[in-house]
Length: 89
Image 1 (cartoon, helix red, strand yellow):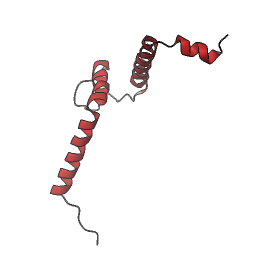
Image 2 (image 1 turned 30 degrees about the vertical axis):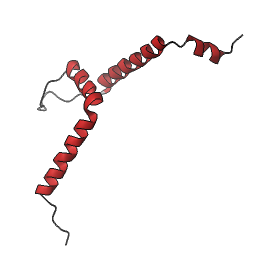
Image 3 (image 1 turned 90 degrees about the horizontal axis):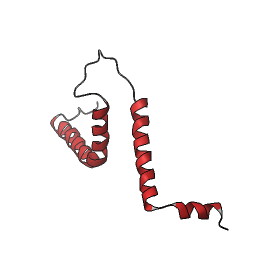
Image 4 (image 1 turned 30 degrees about the horizontal axis):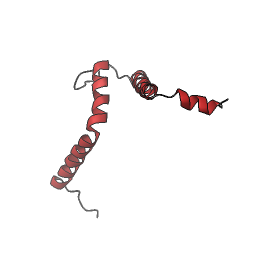
């Protein structure tokens, strides 16, 4: 007779593991979508809104995270190079 941990390990299959990961990923998307802040309609925005855009942005975060980070640092350093801060007196 196997213990509980043995039964759990025996019931794990690659399909169940992948399915569990997919369910958790979709669940985290749903929670993020429902708990994000809602801004007033009067506030001007750039770009599209809605759940489709949210899915696109989340996918883009996973795929292009490092590229976006490098791009942001380049913008900051370029701005600092052109506008050096004044020395403190």
